[in-house]
Each structure stands twice: as C-alpha cells, then as structure tokens.
Length: 238
Image (cartoon, rainbow, N blue to C red; front, side):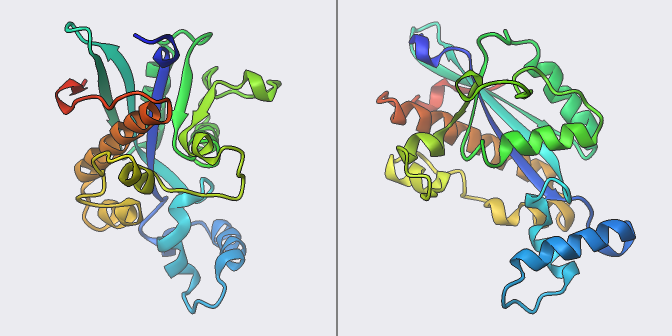
C-alpha cells in the first residue's frame, strides 16, 4: 500500500434531535434551546418546537449520534487497493460511543489519522462533546488538549479542497459529482435523517446511508491525492 494511505480511518456520523417529544424535554433545556433558536430564526415563523425538530440534530448540545460509519484502506490478495467498512448504530448513544471508542483504541494511536468531510467543523467536535456528555473519556486521537495544530492527526477532505480559501464550503455530494464518484444520496440525504429516525423508526436505512457516505469519502480522498478510484468489487462490509 502507498505509505500516505496507511493508518487512515475514514469516519462519518449521523445525528438526530435528542428526542421526538419536545414537550417532554427538561424545562431548563427548553429555555436554552429558545436562546439558541433565536440565532437562526431570521424571518421564519416556525415555533421553538418546530425549529427543534428541524435543526436540533446538528447541535451537539441538543442532538445525539445514532450511527457512525468507518472505513480504511486494505491490501487485496490481488495486490489492488481495497476498502473495508463497518457501521456502528444504536439507539443508546452511550453504548454506541463506547463501542466506537473500543474499536478506535485498537489502532496504533501514534500513527492513526482520522478523516472526515467537514470533520473539523462537525464530526470531530460533535463526537468529543457527546462523549463528554455521556461521561466517556476521549480516546487519544480525539483528545486535542495541549496539542499544537501540526500535531493534530485529523484530515478533512473539505479542507483539502479549499486550498486555503476559508470562506468556501463544498458539500461531499458536489465533490462526488465533480469526480464522478457514485452518490450516496440515492435513498435519503442528510436533511431527512432526523425524520427517518424519529418518524419512520428506520435505523437500518440510516446505517446504509452512513456507510455509503464513508465510501464516497474514502474515494474522494483518493481523487484529491491523484489516485484512481477503488473498484466496487474491492469495497467490503466488515
């Protein structure tokens, strides 16, 4: 395997509002949500409850993680590059995060690098915040305390695409289209995850979508480094 492709763990998380019953939420948290909602209410006439169901999932203080997909490059017997993926899903967030932490700690912490799309703004901090809320000590690869910028083992495909343009946002789906990578949005997209979880009760559909996103992510990383895509036959589910 090409050295720069070793020891990378691609991750993608799916998040939802912490509850589907806003009325049952702690009154103290309702007050805090109302304050948060005022920052992005703008001209909308939506109530705090409606905004909660629409936006709470993207805020770690009011949402939770229900699915984490991971992927890593592997060498095939044929000598070709392959991709191995695994998905962790659970209604119990604490159990989900503990399983994820146990998996991640099996890797060599000195060499492991994480990669996500917009991970530095979303996936990594969200994971850290939810772990702390669930009283789970952070694994070494996520514990940034005391580390300098160049010591942080986090890769971000959106940052790689920015080339220093800090005002530029590009979605994973747009980059997949640009590089002719099969889309992960054929069944649902990120805006529908909360509805699919709380209304349809379909965690399996979210799991499939999350895994597809991590495949796109790993393929995009290859294209951003000037390598060929991995054939579909070389992508496996652990």
